Length: 76
Image (cartoon, rainbow, N blue to C red; front, side):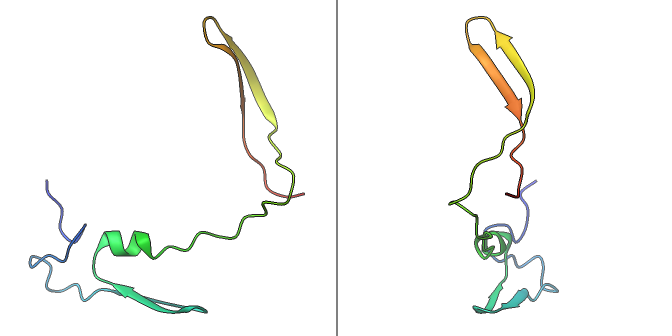
């Protein structure tokens, strides 16, 4: 399987005219998957806030050490 419209426009999909997204910053458009992925704007992250990582479990692995397992939570 080689996929069509993944990295470049394919002649095998003449029915697909492309995609368009309108946002505050302006209009963005493209014709293949890589352009759509590149057009994603990551959300603003609160880098000045504390990191909250509630632990779910702690594993003690011989030869490795202690491995804490948890999930990053949002909020204050």
